[in-house]
Image 1 (cartoon, rainbow, N blue to C red):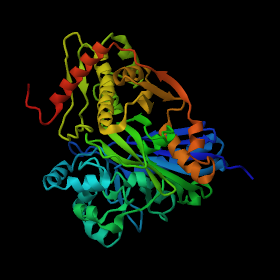
Image 2 (cartoon, rainbow, N blue to C red):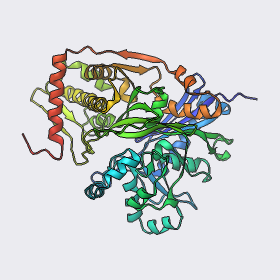
Image 3 (tube, one colour):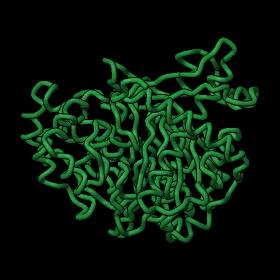
Image 4 (tube, rainbow, N blue to C red):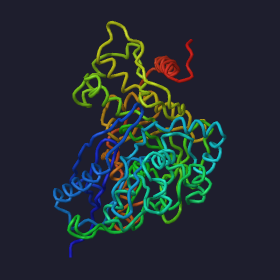
Length: 499
């Protein structure tokens, strides 16, 4: 009998879907990736086609299994996903009733403002650890129920199912047999009480959401169900689910309170493990579930940057300054300094600690001798500055001084960026040997539930540092650069009146 000592991780992100097979030593045996279209129906609106996502999940999973030569060794499947993005589908057919509304989407900003004006944010903050912002799922779901014909009536009759992307994939993988999510994804909906670990009726009433729509909430590492045997030739256990940023916490083995990781993908998300106690932020950080194992939640403080890698994508697709993201490393080193050029990538508003959905991006400090290299460097620098803003806020919240931070995601492969980040944070930046930590975290969660790894200690033993970056910049230069950044940010805020 073949030993089942590998896992398949499905990493469904904002711009692409990847499937990766890992062995029990956390080695990547095979991977497949597919980008999919983004839809922008109106200013500030972002949508995905759920059928595109499902097709890519299926195709990349099959490709990775075939390429790995280990299809019969898969013990379980782990799913990690773009968070807050919502899908509503028919229970009878599994067919979505509308495109998925993406986490970046700002169409409900006015609804959130109205609820804030009515004093609802205190309840949201107390129960969920979140802020009232269109980033999260609840107002997106309410919008969809109100704007798709018959959706609210059908929801109230129990004909429809709601889920974040993980739930939709799980439903499809199991042939419609399982409607569930994990505690990390539930904690991002603005409908889940993170203290009692259950859906909250007061919040459902506030956002006018019928409870019949909601999935069952389970641990991040547990048996959810099995795949339809027709999909992969046999039924495979689905045994791990976590939102992408929480999966990266697991993949980076940040299991000890005080450990922090930053994932640089489309956005940047920094999570600081706070243990079994949820810490309430005084600086508009989020309190969230980092993972839930054996019924016990571990919490984190989180800071969200909406645009990180998306700024580099904009340089490529919007301005056509580059043809590949990797060129920014060379461009940043080509110029000796930023030349006073700053980019604030507020393309979809600003996240923590500002939470200003109406902020807009800018590039400032341009002179006639500024070049494409300066703009590319400013884009990279902007992500490090935003990370510094998050770390500073967490320190003020009592998160402690960050002596080191573990990084992953696409931008972490850029040596110049990692060094600049270390200089700005005045902290060590550790890049793991395997930077695919989001997918790896999903794999670890599935593996812990199926016996590939026994527990968190076994998972932590698999983490290996690939590169270390330590602060080198002169403190005066650093202070001057940070002051310029703060002035640039001030000019992007919706409250800016000049001066």
